[in-house]
Structure formats: structure tokens, C-alpha cells
Image (tube, rainbow, N blue to C red):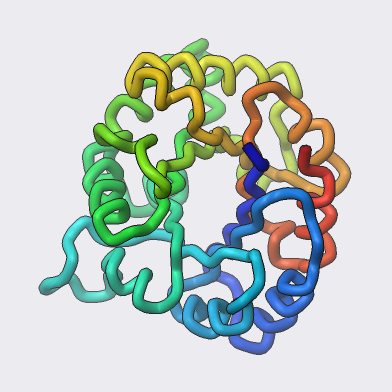
Length: 246
């Protein structure tokens, strides 16, 4: 399976900046799957810029309900209508800043699948949890609580992204050995939870992925791609990471 390089723009970008990032991506030739997840305000314009190209577009979150009195939220169907085909769910910044629980992430994942979106469910441990030797237990619990039945089935089968919280936006990156050990643990957990279908779920690594460390990270066993933050805001850096894909 081709590796997936996904860019999470987070709360960055206006229309002119989005065009400057997206336009070079549309014409690039890479041996991996490319995805960009801009803020909700830019999804429609970025999807239009990338129409006809192999680059997919996604959202950064969705509500568990299809509609209703939820001021400021956006539903999975709305993302789909705007041109998104994917959605990031359960990112550590959502879990920390908005208090999202595994159960809420699970409900959002079900909503995303129902709307025809491919979910990317994020898991990750804090520095304190890793120091206490709890990293694998924390990740296992997040997976068990966040992934619904059928997560890995069908053409829209979900993706898991492992992002150690202590490596997101800090410039620190997990070692190759750390990544290998955790991705092996995630694979074993997916097989336990999902059966044979858990063997084909792509597991992305995220956390200060840059052009200079991408090749070594993407070469690790069970790494099915990368979820890229800051480096996805520069087309040249994002494409350099994509060209490092297996």
C-alpha cells in the first residue's frame, strides 16, 4: 500500500496563502498519496484548486451530529459538501484544548464514516506518561476507546496517526527505535481489536516531521506515512517529505 503524507495546516492560512501552498502540489509527481487538511474556511477553495489532481482534501474535525443547535461546529456532511474526503479526529490539541474523550472521538469517527469521509484518528502519549512507562497502555486505551467496529472495512477504511504529544510542534522527534516499537504495538492492538482488517490500516507517524528526518522515519516498519504539521505550510518542504516516502 502506498504511504500517505497528510498535511495538517491547523489554524493557519488565508486564501492567498492557501493558493501558494496548494498550487505547486497539484502539479507535483510523487510516489505516495497526498492529503492536505486546511482550516474549514479554506476547504472549498483548496478543493477547487486541487480538482483533477491526485491531491486529496480533508477537514480537521467534525461534530458527531449531522446537524442541529451546535454553534461554531461543523458536521461531517458539511465537510463532504465543501469538497473534503477525509477528516482528522482526536488530535491531541483537540483532546487537550477541548477536553475531547475517546468516546467523543469514537462518535465523530462513526459520523465521518456515515458521511463518506475517511477518518484519521490520532493517538499519542504525553511526556509524563512516557516517563512513567505508561505509553503503550495509554495508546492501547485510546485505540480501544476511539475506534468503532468497522473502522478498517471498505474503501473508506480508516487511518491511525501516532503523534507523541511531546513531539508536536516542539522540534523534538521520537527516535527511530521509539517509533518502531510504538507502531508495532499499535499494529498488534489493531489486529486484536479489528481482526485481520487491522493488518491493512495505515499507521502514520506525526510529530515534528521535516524534510531532514522524513526518510528515516518513513523507512521504519509499520509506518504507513506521516501526518505533517508546520512543514506542510511550505509546499517545498511538504513535497520534500512526500518524495522521501517509500
